[in-house]
Image (cartoon, rainbow, N blue to C red):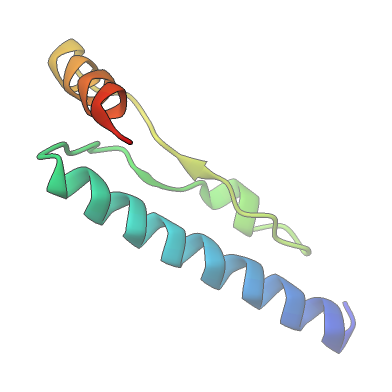
Length: 74
């Protein structure tokens, strides 16, 4: 892996972590918690990471509240 590709990989992981924090905060404002919300570890374990965020599973109640929050979003 070249120095440039290492910098790119680090930037991708940092962006995913920031996005995850922002999503978690936005969900918290709507009083929604997705317990399985995380960065998929398999997608950052590669030589050239390309992070994906897993939303994971949730209860029907949480899914209904999430749908309602999205419907009321501008």
